[in-house]
Image 1: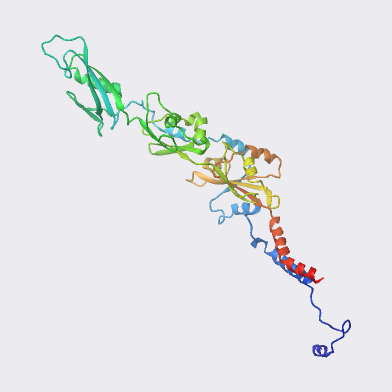
Image 2: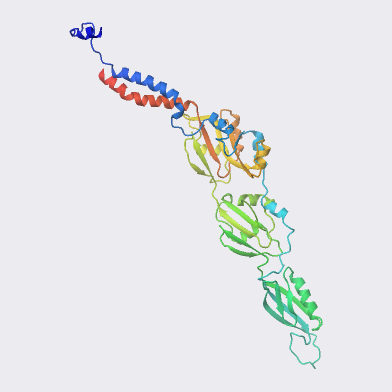
Length: 409
């Protein structure tokens, strides 16, 4: 049959049984669109994306392979905000409670030097005079300056010999010297002053105007006193971390928290090391936000509503306002109080807080939810994004065919 048809003579224009007909470009585009639509809808998940959707975040939480850090998701609520705002983790106050009761800051130790004044009536072991002269009613002082305390905590004095003074106060050293001189001198009186006090001092260093050693006095200086004596800091208190090292343990908090919480402004002890560290606070935004960026706080406090505004908020064309997520590491006791599983031995646990901005009440909650340094804010993509991207891809591929179709007409 095909052979017969091919054998027929060519029909004149406008007539005949069969004639060759070209497919119009517009028709080609339509066919191509149908093919791409079928392939695109079947493979939406292969299209580029800025991050997971709400369902994908929640599904990954239940999948041990994807949730290798063991995070939990918590909905932001009034009870949660009350819990977070009331939480004051003990830092310096913990060191104070664990330490032995502070000793007076006038104890002598190795490396110190003492000024010693010895007063004797008449002729004494430290004063010169004739043995036949009458006793004088005037006390004659003998000054012995800069007597060093050696590495063993001892001093050496004429007519007295070796005297162990480590851990003794000035008054106790005076009494000991006076006791040893009673059998050798007439009514001896002794005065001791700590000239160089290394034992009763703290070290302040880091982001302060004057790093160095600060001697402690009987006034019983506190943390803020030492920072002030070191010249203080030129930076915002919120961006300054104060780290205290004591007896092999460390604790730290921001300078602002230290100023506002009297319980953290603890008494200093000899040997404390105080470091001020500049750590500008910031949070990072990802996903369907108008601006993906790292944003500094610039103010003393920032709440979640302010953080969202600073990155332009959720994108109208991409974001799912029902799925605003905030990723943060919290202390294990907070995770436990929120009913999340806590890994044994872990002090910090990852938590994801979710805010539903479809609910008008969430805007009030966002104003009271405090942001913390290094928070990660993620605005999830809407599920329809993938479909929209598929149609955009189809439009891009169809446009050459559509243009050719219009030209052919």
